[in-house]
Image (cartoon, rainbow, N blue to C red; front, side, top):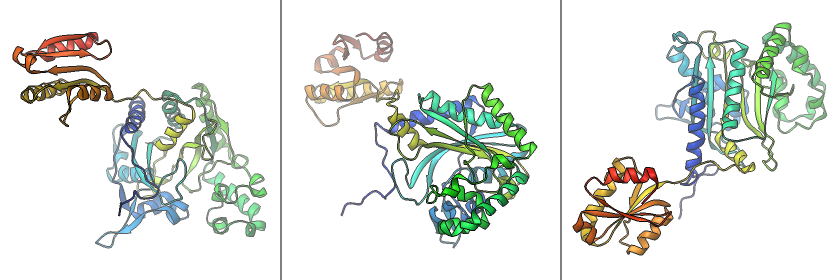
Amino acid sequence: MTVQIPRGTQDILPGEVEKWNYIENTAKKICENYQYREIRTPIFEYTELFQKGVGDTTDIVQKEMYTFDDRGGRSLTLRPEGTAPVVRSFIGHKMFGNAVQPVKLYYNGPMFRYERPQAGRFRQFVQFGVEALGSEDPAIDAEVIALAMDIYKQLGLKNVKLVINSLGDKESRLRHREALIDHFKPHIGEFCADCQKRLEQNPLRILDCKKDHDHPLMKTAPSILDYLNDASKAYFDKVLQFLGTLGIPYEIDPGLVRGLDYYVHTCFEIMSNAEGFGAITTLCGGGRYNGLVEEMGGPETPGIGFALSIERLLAALDAEGIELPVGHRTDCYVVAIGEETKPAAFKLLQALRSAGFSADQDYLGRKVKAQFKAADRVKAAFVAVIGEEELRAGKASVRNMATGEQKELPLEGFITAFKDMANRGEA
């Protein structure tokens, strides 16, 4: 019986891996330009971390986590998102005491959620995210958004839009919460079981319901923007002002929410407008979470961040027909003619690699013609041939595969001569 790959996972094969590396390296370089530094956290954590950091009432915690007991009976969970582990590390390593503030971090790695697989959604998926901890300046909200937009821009995406909203401060949210309860309560029986539970626990999450999003009451629900106090309005206006200064267009959506109590002020999503992209248009989501560090046992520390899906980014690139500048590179393919030439060819191969060139040779005992075909298949720029005559003369015959020109180079000092030839692209 053949063992199949688990549902909701994927193999990323040669030819595709290069695209992933290019995207991740581009994002990392942008983060470094913004002075964000990489952090790596474990793939599994104690379950309690996500119950606190994601929220007991969320679908992620209630329905989607991969949770198991270890041999000591401790409950562990494969991480479903990246913010809670980063905040846990921030507290545990007392980064709030770092001399350089705010603490600006980025992460990249696999996350796990048990949900129905579909286009652009997997049970194991890769998130790239940033977190800025320690500043309540509206400018850093704009910085985080600009960083995310820069990633998509530098990768060539054009059909993207920024959607933004304010959740206000605690006072504003409390007033909005009461208005939501009054709005939905008379007809809550028309909503799904999850929404009925959310009415008292967390009514803001009703607005996020996928089952009842077409219910008429959703369209007439009280807008958080109508309940912002003066301080919250001023904060939101400053964020929008900074975005305007940077020339970043945005669309305000009062229905864009984050359900957990520690999310305040700015929340945003970046979406694809590309034709044929699919039903799931969100590429990236983020927001400000000023109460999360405190909720998890640390000192009161404001924070803001975002997470983007690499899989959805790749889908958006495909939808816009964007080809990334990646490919397999072979600088030189070494061809050995005859058994006695193999040691010299193998030595030359390793010398090329040690000098920083991408090089390969035949390991299947193929004839000379077949070896040249193999060099073509790997798109070798040059082929170095060592036959019996070349071996006796202490030389290798080097062919430029683009022009067909050929030149003999001495085996002694071959690398120096080959470097010069490769730099000039001649044979």
